[in-house]
Length: 188
Image (cartoon, rainbow, N blue to C red):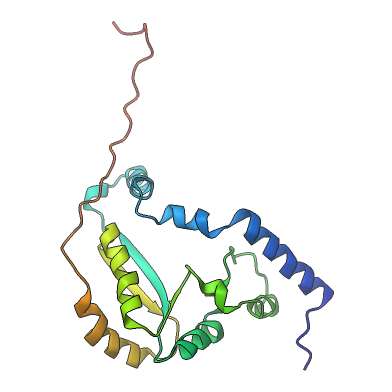
């Protein structure tokens, strides 16, 4: 079986690499989820646009992670079972499974950095989850990308979840909407 890229696939791979470097850097993604007022301001703005009160809405997040008993197993399952987690670009335009499979071959361990917590160390997993609790998220869903779901649920239930500091809802500043002032010279 020949796993070399065709000329078209190589052009696609090169194009994706250039796009990621120029338009979709980690710094750009991190800015959105750094706990800054910008994140919660956007949250409040979206809630109000939908006619909802942001102070009463849950702040939910899904964390993608790959946990296994060894570092090698954790990374292997991330690459094998969830390569799209290492693809830092929109995937909605992928038209067929063959193109997706070709792109999946490009995924390397370093592509998961800051996209999916890949670690066998429970302390690192706890620290990662706690970071988001401390940011103000009050409902966090954990997505383990491996097939070791029974073991994951048992270990995280006994050794990770009890270590998290759940201090109740963290007060998150929700900016009020801007009130439009009358232009100068138009007041009665």
